[in-house]
Length: 80
Length: 80
Image 1 (cartoon, each protein chain N blue to C red):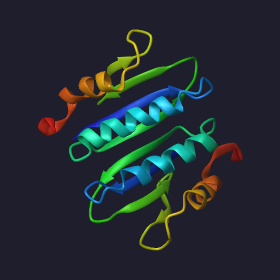
Image 2 (cartoon, helix red, strand yellow):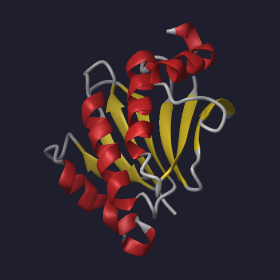
Image 3 (cartoon, each protein chain N blue to C red):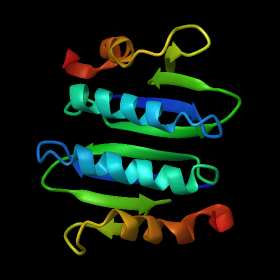
């Protein structure tokens, strides 16, 4: 089972994006992962980790919910 | 700093409620808590914990986002 972590910049107002990623990941893989954590951060951070491994970093890729869900998929047991 | 956990029943379709609680808690206390975790469960579970302590359980109380946010508040550093 898997833990997905979405660390987002609170003062930058990235909560909506973080929430949308959490929802999309859970809608897709809810039966196969343990939890999705919304982790508070600052300094513009928006990073998604699956079991500790970075699968998305806004400093490297454009924000795209579907792409993030696809990047999480290899880390999900059962590949739901 | 505080971890808030929302354990919800995946097959019951409680994701929307869990998401709404996560968002409300982070909107209120985002500067003062570490993370809000959406934890997958089944059997009708809908429990909210703040640092491990149950602050809401759907078997005991009616679902009300504002009430849940109020129940989390005493556990938040700085009482944001």
